[in-house]
Length: 69
Image 1 (cartoon, one colour):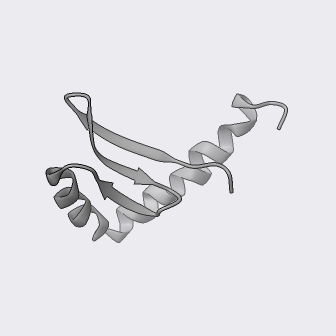
Image 2 (cartoon, rainbow, N blue to C red; image 1 turned 180 degrees about the vertical axis):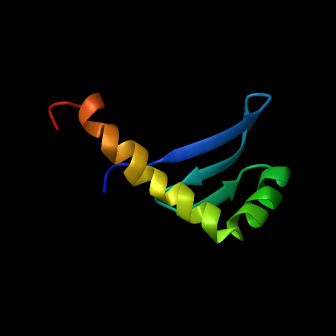
């Protein structure tokens, strides 16, 4: 429950949009990011794939990163 998958998209060092596994959807931080988040959140297959990244990538590798856990 403490592990979180975040995928951020930046342009000119400014975070525009982010997928957060705790929220379960894309969140926009700029005008363009908000518009893209609305479009991307309608794609349920992409949301499911991004949500699965927490189990596939994070939980699978947590033992490699933190061997004492």
